[in-house]
Image (cartoon, rainbow, N blue to C red; front, side, top):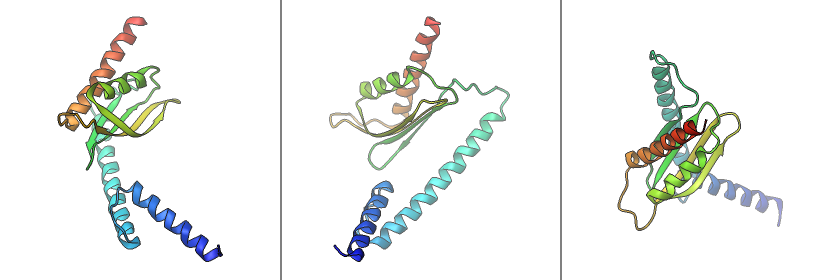
Length: 158
């Protein structure tokens, strides 16, 4: 394989990776780049909204508790994106969240989890085939209930 073919193959792989990361259904490279650009703009808007929400939340009279997780659920074309963040690591909470996913029939397709100093979970999930049409609010409520239940049982053990 000559160097140009190798480079072309590598570039093709990178375009396919970009296509999958941005959920693009485009076939040609130009359209993939356009979809990626739209995706980046959409992410920038989400970051701005998140910053605005955080600023609004911090300016309230209530102090922010780093142990209280923030849960957001967004409806995707197919499934949901679930984000959970707590300023402090919460041992055992991940198990409760995953059990909640199982209880409501949500299959996790991809997840990134960090439990080092803080707790952070970003998951993409889809409803089981035999599911009866859940929405993002139902997912958020199930996750919030699981965290609350875990928190209460944790408080009892302390």
